[in-house]
Length: 343
Image 1 (spheres, one colour):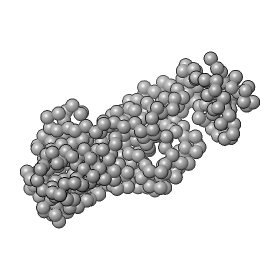
Image 2 (cartoon, one colour):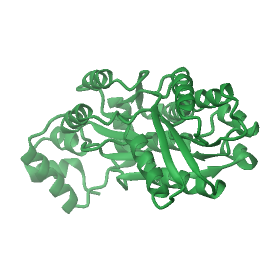
Image 3 (cartoon, rainbow, N blue to C red):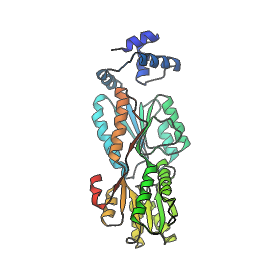
Image 4 (cartoon, helix red, strand yellow):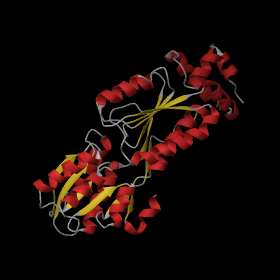
């Protein structure tokens, strides 16, 4: 087995320098880093798992979890899965710091990311799709910090990989499903969290694409509810009163579903509006059992949390890079008869 000492001797550097490069710690001049990685590859260097685990215990690597998820029920399962994984990985020295905020505030997220430089070795991030956030991610990765985006991705960033669903496909699935359920005129009202969230915009694009050849389908209004139930209720009530001919509500994110359903009930429209949503929150299940929601699309929140933490663990403790850039989970249709299989 090739050792760090042998690589150091061949490269004319210290063992500590080789260790920093191979374990993605600290700053090493680019030419030395390239030489060390080249020699290690040529010699088929493979880290000793027991040695890596021991090194991780001594180093106590830190992963920061940054999510604007406060008040959004979908993320309860994601966070629960990450907490469970973090507990099992703590024996290897892995530590977790939580940065949970409410609302899609770019300045808040940028401030959180700025605080992480020099403090953590990895970040699991649910990003707001903004160039300022992309710039912060680039600063992190350039300093050697491993960055995963979870549940939502971001454009033009240097993040290492993404864990979540294919949002465009989710929108296509919802649009196609709607046309299977309702063959008549589709006057559609859309409620979503925020177009600042890339996935919400992609889901809307996929939904539009699925309906593009249907002359009976028209989008009457789109409202952004910030994934806030009270705001969703107010905005959907306003939308329904302004457009009384709406006979479809498409909830393109989970945070405002219950608010939208309450607005429908306030208008006495429970029996004549088709509702297609995402995820399986308890309130969503309740509305499905009452017959107000016809179908939902499940996104595997627990698996998202598990996979993200596993990728971080493998990278920080075992030195394994992600096998793929996009770690996509399937969009699965749930109706009242099989809704409990998603819980």
